[in-house]
Image (tube, rainbow, N blue to C red; front, top):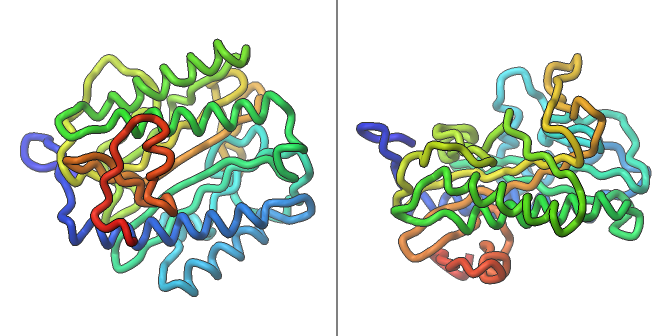
Length: 284
C-alpha cells in the first residue's frame, strides 16, 4: 500500500465497494457467531459454522490462505491473546472468547474481531466486562483518530490514551500488547503498513483518501508480556491474565470514515465518538 517514496496509496471508489462486500460478509459472519457463543459449544464448531457461512455467501475464508493455517477463525479463550486455534475445547459460562475472522470476496479482503463473555454479560466477572468494554472503546478511539492528511500512528496514540483513561476509571491495570499490531488490507489480508496499537515516538506516514487498514487493539488485565504455545500459533499472556481483542477494517475518506466490516458501516459507533461517517453508498 506504499507508493513512491514510501507514501501510502488509496483505493478507488470501485475498489472500496468491493472491499465493502468482503467486509460486510465478515461482519455478518461475526454477527451470526455472536449468537452461537454459549456454554457447551466448542471453538471448532464455531469454526465450522463460520466456514459454511462464508463459503455459502460467495466468499473464501482468507485465514486459510495464510501458509500453515487451516482454519476459518482464530478463537482465543481467557488468557489467549490472539491466534488461538479452533479445537475441541468446550466453552464454559464465564469464559471470554475473542473471535477473529476474515474473508476474501472477488479478490478483496475483510478482517475483524470481537470479544464476548460465554453465557452473556450476566455470566461475566466485572473485571472481564470492563476489559471488553475498554478494548472496544479503544478500537473506536483509534479509528476516530484517522483522517486524510493526518498521521497513521495517531491511531496508537489514541488507543493508548483511551486505555489509560479506562484504567483510571475502572481501577484495572490494563496492558496494551505491543508485539502484535494492525495492518493495511486490500488484495491481501495482511499488507503494509503495520499500524501500532500503542503510542510510538514516530508520526508515521500521512493518511490519504481511500487508505484501508485493520485496527486491532489487544488489551490484557495484567502484563503485556506474551509467549507462543507449542502449536506455534496461540499467543497467551505470560502472567496468565485475561485478554481481549477488537478489530475492524476501515476506509479513510476525504469526508470521514467508513468501517467496512461493521454491519451499519460504523455509523452509530463513529457518531458516538464524534467522528464523521462517510460511506460511498449508504444502502450497502
